[in-house]
Amino acid sequence: MRHLPKLVRFTCGVLVFAIVGPPAGGMVAWLGMGAPTMRSPLPFIAGAWLEGGALALGVGLLTGIAAWFGRASWLVPVAAAALLCAIFVLATAGPDWAIMLRVALVFTPPALAAAIACWLLTRRLFEN
Image (cartoon, one colour):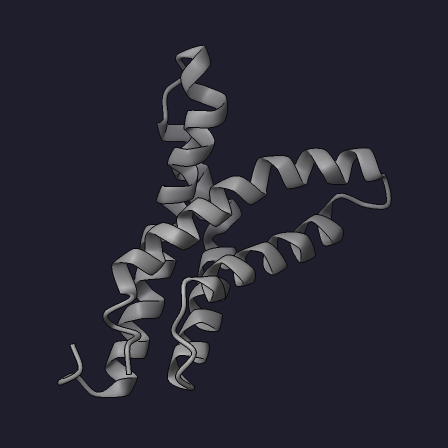
């Protein structure tokens, strides 16, 4: 992949996060909440685009920027997903700590799993 221009690799890597991240997170959410009740995974995957699209794009951008500067590591997308989830929880859950905890427990595991999955798909793109 090193033969591709750096900007092309950056763009392709971010697109992978933006396209693959939400359905990957939606499947993890379905496995945690929907699969035991035999619900269809379709609402989890479709809803993930609305709820996780911006998160996936943000994680992809942060990972791509870090890789651009030679910091290509699996820790970057994991830390970016954790940070952006924390910001999302603080922005949406309000001042109630119990609600914050519930929202964090719903959003963080799928976001972390999606970040790792996307990193595995893009690590060669992000190598210098």
